[in-house]
Length: 374
Image (cartoon, rainbow, N blue to C red; front, side):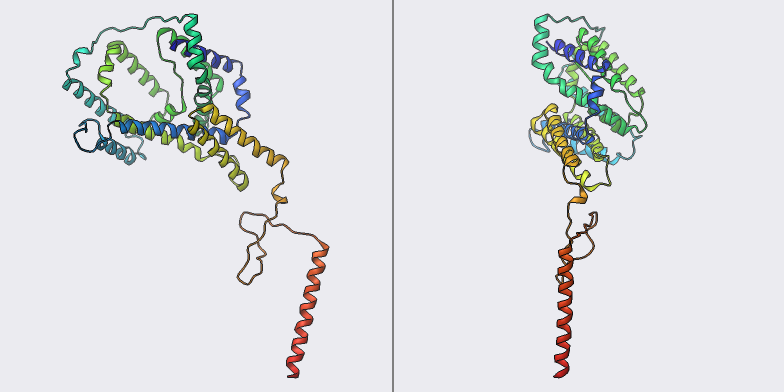
């Protein structure tokens, strides 16, 4: 059923990629919606990172685990922050090596090394039946399709442009690569996988800058998988969740940082405010419903409403801006900063203004004559 879900989703993504239908759809997706998806994904991943840290959330007491506690979580968090501006320091590698040492120590202390079996472990072909394919695709794959398209394609392309200026990723290449690697991998028992904007943000945050990092990571994973196979899970289950939570949390922050450039009109205060509302609506709906598709729909609805207001509603010049009152009760003649003054052409107002000025002048002359007589 798992293979059926992966095969069904990857086939749809592959078709949308080679037919360029997804490219036509994304042309009409506003930037604030994409940034809202990234910000919402950031919050969701941060929540998962904190949940991992809370697995052994103890500073002291009988429940504290020497290799996995809040002391290690705080220490690794501070270490990552201290070297944040020094990207050449391989802090992720250092934390990973320390975590492996702790995992090996815990495996030895619990006398579980006999369950680790080095050798030659190879994959086998998995062909789901028609019933397994139908059940897996309808129960798991269909609900995963919006997440794959939005987070693994649309948000990934936008994040790539932000992290690597001058590079314009092809949606066709992204979708076809996701489709091919799942159509091939799922037949050999692999988990359905995709690129994901969160994974790219994490790799970038911890120092990856070229494709060589992915080649290196893939080669190491294949070598470990062939040598140890599933028996390696005996060691990995002791890897400190505090380290995993901190790395996931900080990688999520890197993903959320790109949302700061959420508009194409930074000089237009009204448009900037509207785009920020769209971003917040998208992110809040994604986190609240825990569904990328619903977050996308809410953001698109908010963007459509603002687009209609800009196109058919009153323009900025038609909205009067009143100046604030001064201490003497008169209004300032200059409008507030960032707003546009409105000149009102009305003959009746002009006549009344002249009449009031004439009455005031006559009153001043009469007062002066009376004072002279006294």
